[in-house]
Image 1: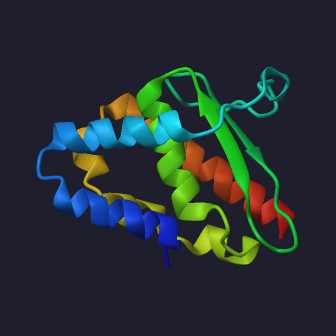
Image 2: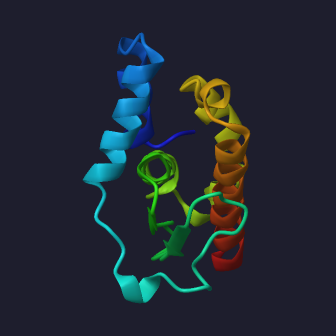
Image 3: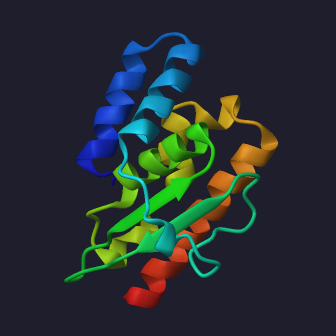
Length: 136
């Protein structure tokens, strides 16, 4: 089950008919995120498999999954914001069970991202799942 913040994004996407508008919305979501401090952009937080530079910093607390992320590409920052809406605040034990592919398909992302971006998105999802499993 997706988090309420993700449901809000999905509802917004339903009203945006044009993919260009959806693309702009994803970028705006990324712009609204607080950037990571440079000290957190280290090899341990870098996600490999992404065409762009991507960093994810998990911080599960009290059985709840939280993370922050950043990228040097605006669309990827937006994709991090979408993943943040999907996972942040979920119970740590539920994070690996979230059907990211199915939820993201609701947004039509699979059909409109390049192969490299899709691979990067999968790498980010895998990192989130791995860190949740480690924290559980």
